[in-house]
Image (cartoon, rainbow, N blue to C red; front, side, top):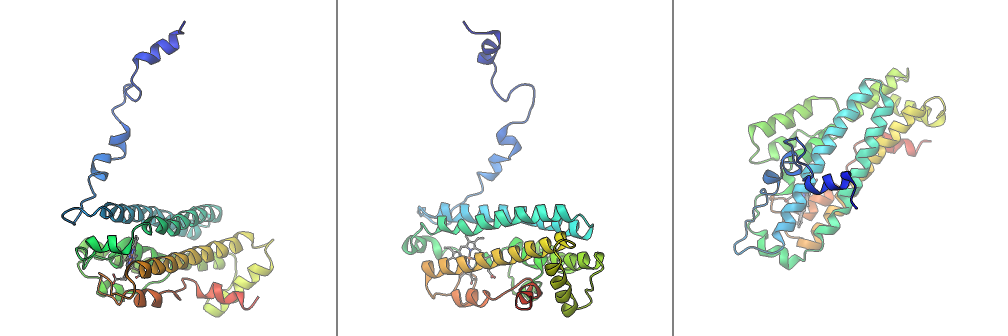
Length: 269
Ligand code: HEM
C-alpha cells in the first residue's frame, strides 16, 4: 500500500512546482553548451578537449578575480578573518588549475598538430583575465597592454583599471599600518613582517595573511612551471601561436615573484 505522500510524488514532475526556473535556464546551459565551436574541418577529435579546458580555466579565472578582489577589499576594511577565508578558497582553486593540466596531457603532440595551425595567432598569452589576476596580485606590467594584439576597447579598459587599482600587496601593507607596524618602504615592511613572525600571538592574523599571500604566489608559480613542461611536451622548442619564442618565453617567466619581500624575509628570520 502506498501512502498519500508517495502517491502524490508519482504524479509530480520534479522541478515543476510552480517555479519558472529550471536547472538549464538558471545555469544558461543553452548558451554555455553552444560555445564550443571547432576550427578544424574535418573535425579533429581532440579539439573539443582543447576548447573545453580553456573555457573551464576562464571560468575559474573569473571566480578567482571575484575572490581576490573581495580578499583585497576585506584586508583594506580590516576584516582579516574574511580575507583569510577567501584566500584559502583561492588556494584550493589554484590547486585545481595546476592539476587540470593532466587532462590536457592526455592529448598527444601529433593529435594536437591536427588543429594547431588553425589557432594562430590566438594564444593563452591573450587571456585578459589571467593578466588581470597577475596585476591584481601585485605583478603590474603595463608593457602587456602594448604586447596584446586584438584587444577590444572593453578589454583594454579592464586591464588599465587593474593597473590603476590597489593590489593584494597594497592591501596587506595597509594591514601592517593598521597594526601600527612601520611600512614606509620595503625595508620597513620586511622588518614588520619579521616582527609578526616572531610574535605570532600578538599578530596572529597578520602573519596568517602573509602566509596566505605567499601560498598564492607559490601556487601561481606552480601553474607556470606545470604549464611550461606541458608546452614542451606538446610542441618542444617551436614558437608559440601567440608569436613568442614559446617555451623560452615561458621559462623566462618562471622566476616571477608577486611578493619578493615575503620570500626575502625567509632568509632573515
Ligand atoms: C596544448 C596546450 C598548450 C600549449 C601548446 C600552450 C602553449 C603556450 C605558449 C607557447 C605560450 C607562450 C605565448 C605564445 O607565443 O603563444 C603560452 C602562453 C600562455 N598559455 Fe598556454 N598552451 C597550452 C595550453 C594552455 C591552457 C590550457 C591554458 C589555460 C588557460 C594556457 C594559458 C596560457 C597563458 C595564461 C599564457 C601566458 C603565460 C605568460 O605570459 O606567462 N595555455 N601557451
